[in-house]
Length: 276
Ligand code: PMP
Image (tube, rainbow, N blue to C red; front, side):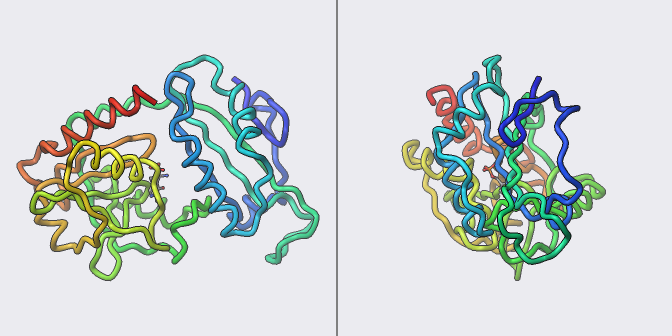
């Protein structure tokens, strides 16, 4: 199956970039992960709006229009199965290594599609571990610079956790690669948007369908103490969708099973996916 690199479709073995690419040297780039169900891009406009924002934050002009992007992705999705697009844009390859932005260098644009892997833990829930949020202050940018996220995810895994829930100044920010929700006193809560978290597209969908499904819901800061007494905790991301955290730092969340609000939300989400 071909991948897309700078205007061409190539076998992945033939897709090469320069060792001077600023993505490689500096992590100087942004990315998107866009699910496509039955070959149809899910929440395409929302993903592209977030891409626009990420690019603007790092002062790279968007090299393509919405319709051009659609055209670029289409040949990667031809078999009509459930896949995701991984799109990465870097500041390109400059003639020499220099922190300063190079002039007259075209961005590197790379995209591939891959099957959405089955996630059997969606039914049973996962274990998560709370860790101190050691990332930088611009986490609203979907930057490829993910070293802190990688280290945190690895640390969580060494404690037997499938995700790290990150804590900054005593409050939840997000997961190492997901947003966090909690059901506390009958209300579904998620931390409000700030420079400290990514505006997850799954998070946006949850907030939208909670309203139509009459699930009481608020964007509100969640302290670590409140998280620990929550009846339900979930993580949400494009690839894993919505997953209940049934064990947090070795203690059960609620009765240690995915809770009733998760059941309702997961049903709403699956129906929304089907209809879009
Ligand atoms: N936060 C972080 C740090 C992430 O890496 C991700 C997944 N890319 C998310 C939140 C969830 O975003 P989305 O729902 O758009 O996949």
